[in-house]
Length: 391
Image (cartoon, rainbow, N blue to C red; front, side, top):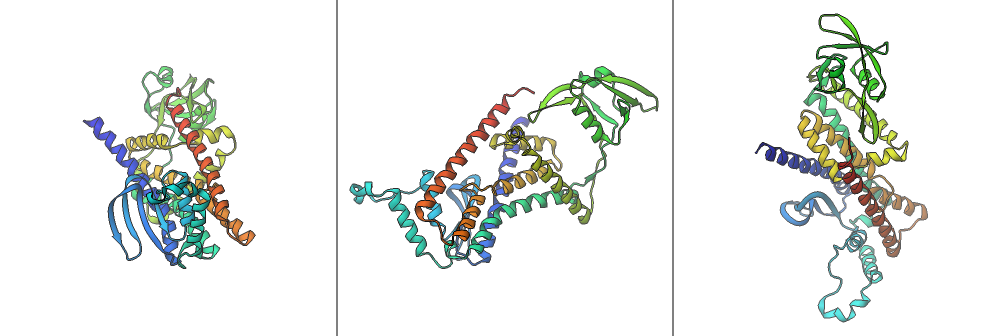
């Protein structure tokens, strides 16, 4: 029963995190569209059949749909792109009624695109495509911006909700039974004073020294709880982590308990974490191998959610921050069907002084769909192979 409850908790946490991520992203598009008085027909969480109509403000329906993994904002005047995407993904309604079945061969993509172009040309003046480029650009940009904002806000809230942890020390808080450290004679309560004669400033420097020395003997200078010193030699075992080989010996350094801080300090900590996250994100692109090892899809996210639930405390909030920032920046990639692709097309429209034709739009969306399909297959392959990767 406990296993079932724990599994259900992980699933619910995964769904809630995903819903929050989608809600904030789509809220950005929605809020800017409303601000510019564009007509918004629907704001929905999920896909598929409508489960619940939450509200209606005279213009916009607020719905919850059956499949909880996603969501959308339906803005009037974007029909030509929406209809093309529905056709390409196989979700378009039938193009012709039965009484015109004999003429169905004439209902080609070109005809449909002409119909869509006519719809856009006769669009509501409050529709998306009737508005200046800068308004359309900001409406599209608002989604990724809100995702980044949510990630930053999650980082900033951790100090106020859970607290700030003091510096990790070099005192050993736990030793894994049967691992390298126990066999070498390290004990709970020992303090690692130096490694290979080099004094340690804190627990992080100790961990980094161990991780960077897989398979290499290290000389530990220890001080026990009575103050007596001794030296032992420890050779970290090699373990695969994130596609890289790291050293592990089976110890956990002591970290002081969390202590809640005020809003000013909490926001300062959030800014520090965001800066560190952006630096780590930029470092990913230093090599193709790092990019591949960093890619993760639904399976990887579900696994990370389970680990976050098991860890408890601020870890689920940290996961939310990481995912939201990743979604925000990923959506800025200039790939058609992503927000970044729309921004690139709007920039092109501004440069050339006119919109793409319906046929050009179709070609762009076909290209975007192919790229997204390739990325999806690549990510899923990464997730599955990672499940069976040793270490």
